[in-house]
Image 1: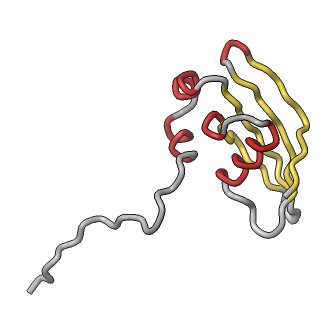
Image 2: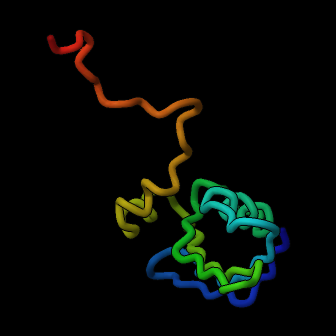
Image 3: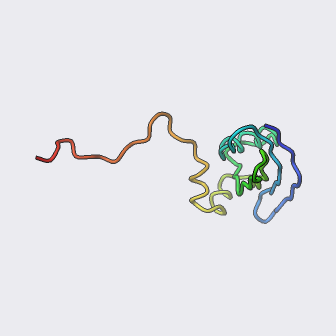
Length: 108
């Protein structure tokens, strides 16, 4: 995957930078966590302060336009960003997902 930064804009009142980049990849579109890891390496920023706001994949191409918010402080990030978006950026627990509790004894 290659990452090309197109625009960077600082927003001091929200204590963040908004970065627009184009990403070329092979196969399926990478996940948010993969994009986040790439952007963190490119910008030399902590991974936990990066939020992938939008991913616009190009139809029929292996390119995507990605909008990223890079925060200066975790407290500001949690105050500004929506909870559903913060939840999307949490790392998945290793292994299988827990299934809801089912009745242990079959009904007779």
